Amino acid sequence: MSKMRLDGQLLVCTIFPILFFVSSASPDLLFYGAFYQCIAFHSPFLTQVHDLLHSAHSPEYLPILQSSIQNLRFNSSVGQRPRYIITPRCADHLRAAVLCSKYHGLQVRIRSGGHDYEGLSYKANTPFVLIDLFYLRKVTVDLKSKTAWVGAGATLGELYYQIANRSQTLGFPAGICSSIGVGGHLSGGGQGTLMRKFGLAADNIVDAILVNADGNILDRRAMGENLFWAIRGGGAASFGVIVEWKVKLVPVPPKVTAFNVPITLQQGATSLIHRWQQIATRLPEDLFIRILLTVGKESDGRTTVRAIFNSLYLGPLHQLFPLIDEKFPELGLHLQEEHCKELSWIESVLFLDRGFAKGKNVDVLTDRKNNLQSFFIAKSDFVNKPITKRGLKAIWNVMQEGEAGIMIWDPYGGKMDEIPQDATPFPHRAGTLYNIQYFTNWKEGGPDVETKRTDWINKLYNFMEPYVSQNPRAAYLNYRDLSLGINNKYGSPSYLRSKVWGEKYFKNNFERLARVKHAVDPGNFFRNEQSIPPYSGF
Image 1 (cartoon, rainbow, N blue to C red):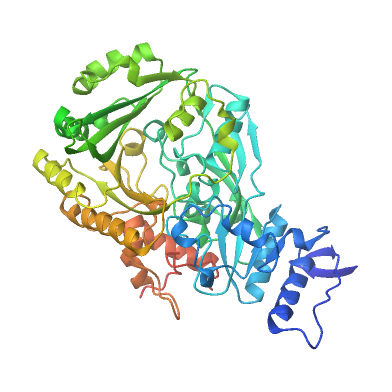
Image 2: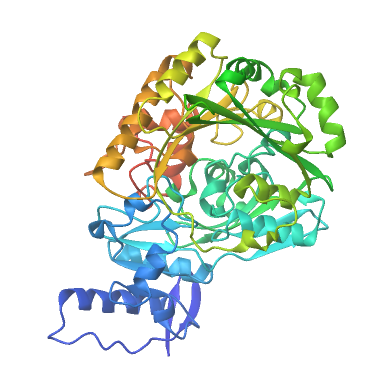
């Protein structure tokens, strides 16, 4: 046993025998031995370091690495793989991971669900340690306070399931895809079907536990309001490692109604979409109607654009039809009872995510098996004024060229209009009509396929420029896009260089984020291609 004083506390640590330090050992083995000993030293009561630390020679290394790589475009690059993977079970393990990585000159990447669109949570071009939060996924629901603590490694599906397991009349406003990790999703904003009534996921965070660059374990009170502000929409991975979030739960009715109404151009989709742009933000907050735009074939074989009006209404079916007839009668002409499903809130999560009908077992929301992996590319935009019918028709023409993907238009308004732009780093509030996600995916790899898909999304994105937000052309952090700009690859980060992409995500909030970064991580330990740089003013 050995005693060491660290951060003013007397820690009793078990020093495990290290058998690597022999004169004939390779430099890699010597480095691993030193890193192993560091982790062991900073992880009191850990009996098996091998359960926590995995080198490339470990049989668990590759299965862990590939377990939540959502974008297969980043699955084959051996040169961008982590030197070590750490799988912490508690905050003390995270502390050890940060301290030892920093001491040994290794960067860190932090992975919750692996959905970072550019793979920044599990790849890098410099030696790094992957901190995989898989084991930190406990969810504790407190019905009395209507709050929940959720580990950063949990998925949205696990959070939703545990809430519904305790109450049929409580929910949480976050994303639709149930396999997304809570750690990253909430820290980037977290839009979803309940945002028009309750705001983003980040707007409903009331506390957090974070490990900072000095290895300190902080809650909201200890970290201070500036850092707490920054991690709720500014991307927490720039500031530390989230251990868990405390979130405010929101009321949901015992029955909700979801519907899908497909309408092609020949059936009048253009006029309906034009009308939707004018009213979607002014509809009652209980009604969320988004549009999924795809390219398909008419019955006669002609290519067409199909719009799916995809909706969640916080109320029973019998109340939906008169509401649609009053507020959106143009859609009411197409809406039939067969398009609708009356469900519990947790069943609607499953329906909107995977199209499962009523009666399906919601236990599938806790299934973390990664069966939905694909190659994909995505981009985003925000729209502040309606696109004319002429503009829409021009967009449909471009959309039908090449290997088409999908566009998703998510309406704002409601609660989103009431929250100030600087309440959190997420600035896209009043005046925003809707968010656009451009998305294309494919199952088989190969440069030719990727080129065709990339050409389609880039051509459409470039064509959309006059129709979307300007100065800056805004983007959503959770749909990360490195083509917007990256930090310096070498040398000190440039605040002015980072503003090129930073103000697209955060607008005027970017400077405050950089000032917070300078205060809490001036050495820029937590960094990646689009991390917040410390403020320098130049």
